[in-house]
Image (cartoon, rainbow, N blue to C red; front, side, top):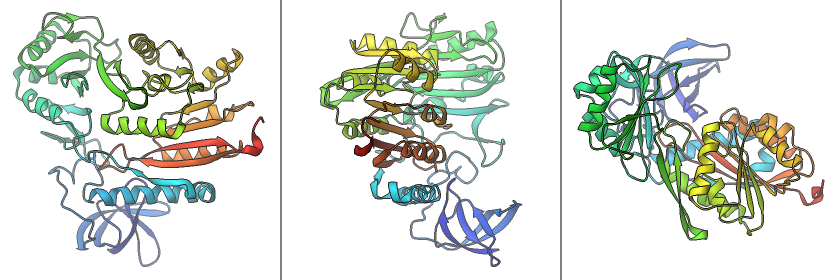
Length: 450
């Protein structure tokens, strides 16, 4: 079937139409291209097809730099130059807002995308699947393994370690019982931590193999077993004692966050299996943008309702009156409290709770936040928004990693007489269709005090 591609839609697929008007979705194509495709699956309202040949290429097309691109499911936009990727993502966001009925209220406030500092080698953490001793990523749309020797999205230190690790006899011994492998770059030391998702508790021979790896590979900061159905551990942390000593104390990574308006750089520690942004450079830009949007005057009370280990809470604490952080994960709250103490920040308060329960507890204690900071997981924050009651905070900042749940939650906030001051796409994951947004909302003047 010959198609002309009209546009790129959510998921990074190209949309074309058959002569009878039926919609056809195709990966690996670009707008205005004429392509030959083969139908792979028929759905109720559309077809999915695979690309056979590009008859007329778009000027934005490039040869994908990764040799595994066509098979690997990790990236889906490498065939487009980076500037075009940003254009597609902005257009997808605009269309989602239009379909949600939010165009009139939001599109005039939509700013240009926040470009990533690096389009490649930006990930400080990767996770690979392991099958029969081989590691790689799942192929597109399947659970078939695509073995890889390196990844263009990973930091060079990660690729260098992976190439040292693969032929090592100790790794080959360990790999038989490993279902997944994570390699984490410690932002502070530039050394690496291995997380081995083990099918069972490690046996003495496997512990010895892990010790051997840490002894032989100087780039390793440490290693942790994450056995299925068991608590994490044992751990090897070369910085907390003699190299190669097994222990029960959890490993820590360290993120350095410059807070320019305060003239300080914070050091935030976190556990390598806990949540942290994978794109350190873009995370710093996002923090800078957040501070610019809020323009803190030094007296505000901020409620960070998905605070994690303090990625936003602690920098903001340098610039506002009080910060109250809430997170459901106990490890995140432990980390946030530890980081506040280590950085001598005494205007931070953290509690473990669901976001809506944490906010209710603050209000019950007589604390009325001036600013709500929402950075929810993909499911969004429907329950939280549904339970907001007067007096409502003057400002809400919503950082979202899922445009569909973002538009749903945004519509609910607009119904509470908030208005969008600005929205901006944040390109946290170049070469992929994934996009994040940051939105600043304020209460309408006519609704103040409501």
